[in-house]
View 1 (cartoon, rainbow, N blue to C red):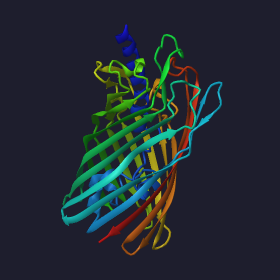
View 2: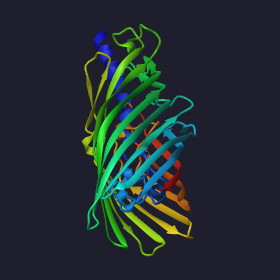
View 3: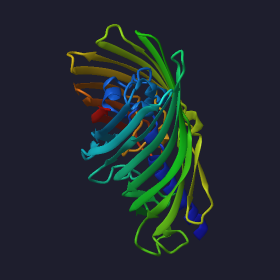
View 4: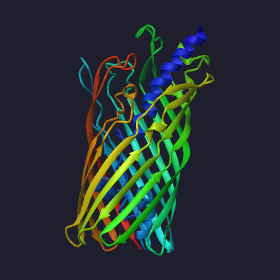
Length: 418
C-alpha cells in the first residue's frame, strides 16, 4: 500500500515537473527563434544566408569566411516578460514583469586562411515566469526558469571557387528550475491530500554539433544553410518538498530532499535562406527554419531509488519563416527591420501550464547600427507575441484556459575589427 501511494505520488510529481521542464522552452513556442546578435534579431532571423558578422558562429559557421582579420563581438540579449494566463471562469493571472539579461561573446580570425577559426559563447534559450500568487488550477507552479548556454569552437574553410563549409562543436549547459508547484497526492480523490514542491533544480552538460555552408556566386546574391544536431542528456539535481518527514511525498527515504533525473532533448533544427543585395546600401534576407520535434516522443524520469517512469510527449515538427532588411541610411548609420511567423505549435495541449506556454507566435523586430571606424554598435528591439486556447485535459488541466504572451527583447552588441 505504501509503495502504491509513493508510486502514485512520484508519477504525479514527475508528470508535473516534466510538463514544465521539458516542454516549451526548446520548441518554437516562446523560446525565441531569433536569439543571438542585434543584426540577426533586427532582420527577423533571416540571417543564415547573410551571416556576415561574428555571431555567424551561431547562425551559420560557414559564414565566418567573410570576415578578414580579427573580429570580436560582445553583446547582451535581454528578455522582458509579459504573460497572462486565464482559466475559464476565473480571473486572469498575470506574471510579474521581469528583465532577464543574458550575455554573448564571439571571436573570429582569418590568420590561417583558407581556414577560418572562431569561438562563441551564447545563451540561445532563456524563458520562464514568476507569478505572485497561487493559480486557480491546482497543478500550476508559481515560478519556473529554463536556461541553456553554448560554447562553440568553430572551424570553416573557403574553397577557390567561393563555396564555404563550416562546423562548430557545441558544448551545452542546460538548467531547469521550478518552485511552488502544488501537487495532488491522491489523484483518485482530487484536492483531498496535497503538498508543495518547494524547489526543483536540475542541470547538466551535453554535446552537439553545428554544420553550415555559405555561397555567394555573384555580388547580388548569397545562400546559406545551417544544421544543428539533436542534443540528448539526463539532467540531474534535487527536488525539495514538504518539511514533514512522515509526509508520503517524501517517498521511502524519510527525507524531504530527493535526487531527481530528467531526460532532456533539444531537437535538431535546419535553417536555410538567401541574401539579396539590390544595391550597395540594401540587404534583404529570407529564411526558413524547420525544427524536428517529432524526435521528442517520450521522456524518462527517475526520482530517488524508485523505478524510472516513462512519460509520453509526441511533439509535432514546426516550421517558421523569416524575412528582414538592412538599409545603410548614411555612411555610418544602418537601420533594419524584420518579421517571423511560426506556422504551428509543437507541444500537445496536455503539456502546457501558466509558467511557460507554446504559441504559434508572430515576431517583429526593428533596430539600428552605427559604425565608428572599426567599431560597430548595434541596438535592436524585438517582440514575440500570440495567444492560445488550451482545451480541458483532466486531471492536469480541468478547464479550458487561455495563454497570452508578449515577450519583448532588447539586444545590444558591440563588434570590433583588428
